[in-house]
Length: 418
Ligand SMILES: NC(=O)c1ccc[n+]([C@@H]2O[C@H](COP(=O)([O-])OP(=O)(O)OC[C@H]3O[C@@H](n4cnc5c(N)ncnc54)[C@H](O)[C@@H]3O)[C@@H](O)[C@H]2O)c1
Image (cartoon, rainbow, N blue to C red; front, side):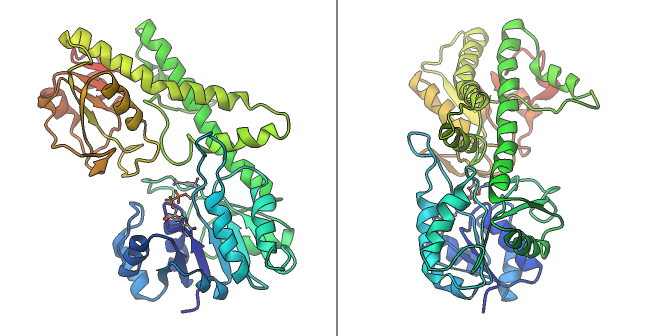
């Protein structure tokens, strides 16, 4: 099979992208370094929640989708899309090692007329300053011999109303011709394509979107801490503000940021801004407030045990309910549950977790759902598979960090809410 689209990285971004192109009738090949991921795809078994195995298998059986570890297949592709992780280093600086290494694999296979698009979230300048020179090591010139663009992925895992297909796709090419070539490719599979003037504009727009979330979550998290001191229900405040039909957008407080994007991406910009003698203070302040939330939640759990059961954190049995970073998904990357469990353990608590979507986490297995066996149940992620009225019946004390118990939890003597 000669692939029309090669996608490097078969993860949360690469998989839905592959599906949407294959469903549009393109021949797609995914490249990944993990044997089990490649084997699974070729058997039609999906490892990504948003990609149903049934749909995947149909496309594999139809010969439209396949996977391999061999970069050589990219030689034949018309377009190469890169959806690789862009993490932070231990010093919280951009770590483009995976991206650079993979682009280094693409370069010797690059041929005249191909289109290369970076989809990974990263700082403005990455496509031009990092990807372009490595690709040009091939002897081919970007914008002349091959097209190069940046097009950020906007997928929201677990969401079915806005998908890869119907979420508008931004495209910023190195030259107008690069933009047009990339836009044409995406138009074949995605409902709306928004052409931009440069890769840097597209890179910065993706960061604005994520920073907007980080800052607004921090704002409401700060308010939640003040509301706790003032004995005001922050959830009621947010719900009340939501009744304003204009000029307000609702963000919910929570135990801290999670996932591969919001806790990480803003610091890509912080790092890059320093090159311009610029300090991104909103990002740093939001990071500080959000990073403090697990500590605030620990003190809430401690108060609940003190006042509700005359117990201390030390020696108490605690069930953490939900460890995925958000409801109804199985992704645990950067989940605040990890920090909360660590803090509770350091305080001497005996901690188990239960999560219907996550079988193993942090060296533990998901325990049976027996809330009555614990001194306190802490709702860290509000999966809809849990019956919260039943939880209120069975648990001794509930610390609800997500307002999962809603109005039934408010004023209920055994519930402590964030
Ligand atoms: N997950 C999201 O919701 C989301 C949303 C928007 C943007 N993004 C961004 O998209 C990018 C990819 O994120 P993701 O969540 O899909 O990551 P992921 O970890 O789910 O997937 C990355 C895949 O790349 C593979 N891989 C690693 N090194 C490789 C190599 N050298 N060659 C081939 N494959 C390799 C891994 O095995 C993995 O399967 C990141 O920059 C992320 O910030 C993610």
